[in-house]
Length: 435
Image: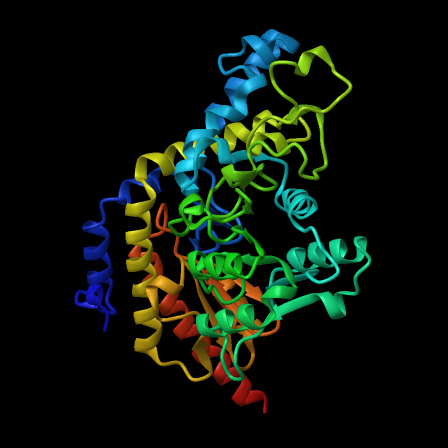
């Protein structure tokens, strides 16, 4: 039993008491809570798409009004001029990921930013040409890595290394990562890992991986799609070379939202570094002189290609304002407690064939538990959906559950656990009667 489980009990009274003592509970009222067929749902899918902050409509309406009244002049004369609108997110973004303001920028979408980083930071040589990813990385990471290997003339069969868990285990042990890096490091050009693995929920020790990777001469980057807004990040202090993340999961900026990018300050003034260039990344002082030669902005902004989507940035700003007020320290503390309660309840029920593949160590997981369902997993997930529980199913046999600290409650978690137990019983009875 962890220290914060002393007051955990599998009753509604206990869950209500935990919610009553939650200083972040008022933030739930800042979000639109979904309904299905007129019935409220328990939404535990923030790892896939975060809920809409109520203030989003006001923020976007402000830009619609300025567009209507000002037309093109809105770039300069809107209440928040569009020319510099992305800069209104810089300080908040830097605080969110533990960076200096010049090291971050909000732009493009996740995989586009991933490709931009790979262009600049995957620089293979005959001796050092491999890319290291997780064995169960999100498909986009694998597709992007393989495409760059092929672009440079390498066969992914030879040049793509994957971190594999030990037989019978779901997570990759840190000592195994270190051993692989020390064994293969001199051949690895780029380490590219998810800060939090999307499938298992494993939090990687990014500081240690970066230190070992650099000692071996590797460039180190991270896909933080499941980490930004979920765990505490210190990208600058960890000495990470580059990172990307999306804003539609834990950051609640809406489907297809503008993404984020981090480039360490050591690369701030490296115009010689290969990159795919665009007008918006050009020196702001001379941008409108339309020069023929590209002069990149110092820092992460120099990787911009096009002007940003203002309505998307307005939606993100609405959520980031909430994050900034709540603070990642408080959010992470509640997240550990909330996910810990979910873990406790699932253990308490001891459902045959349902096992957790996410670590039981709070430091090695975020706001997510991935549950391996031995048999009839799809049917079990469908029964949860029918019971107005929104979580997600990942092939071949995993249900992912994300209790998000900004808007989920301890009662939500208890409701899920009760529904899981009931669905498990129904599926078991159904399978026995049909056999």
